[in-house]
Image (tube, rainbow, N blue to C red):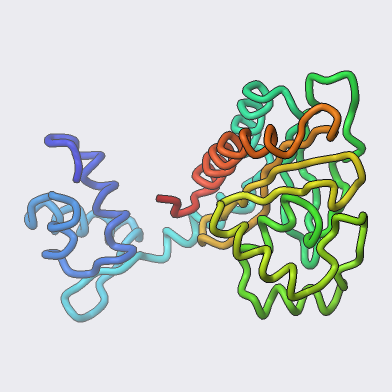
Length: 250
């Protein structure tokens, strides 16, 4: 519903509504805007190319929306959109924070903020990471279809990086169900001995998993229980990034 008397809010509400609703009556119902006003707004949107008649008494998004979206996406930088949430997570926890994006069968770090600790993590922007044994990687896999996860595992294998690595495909699949339920993944020295991470998934404007946010620390500095206590902060940051990327996050 829109604020009473705000013509801009009403027009934007109608524009958003035509993505899912086509009849004037339905658009009026979901927006709270009168049918006469909805009709008037739709006529203006048609003139501007943001809407068009569907030939059956209804309306649908117009070609100008696609043109505008295309122009925006060519300049869209996920790392820039994530920067604010990443900084806030870094400030709240004091640990090294990462943002990585899936690239085929792996993920790639696109941003990193070093923690306020007397040590540095070996990760760097541009470094690729395996999906089956990292917090961000498992957060990504948990939101893919099982057949896609198995296809990835078939191509890359599930090599044992450390004694803690889940190196059997079926064990990984079972583990991912828990990750999906919890909303975050833990890397308990599964990728690099002595390093723990907690990561949560980031989704794009289509609702598909894009990558993930994580914090990392040395095991001597933060044990698993301490890491899990920080998981809600990571989940919160990942949700903020998803929203910044236009994801339909409730």
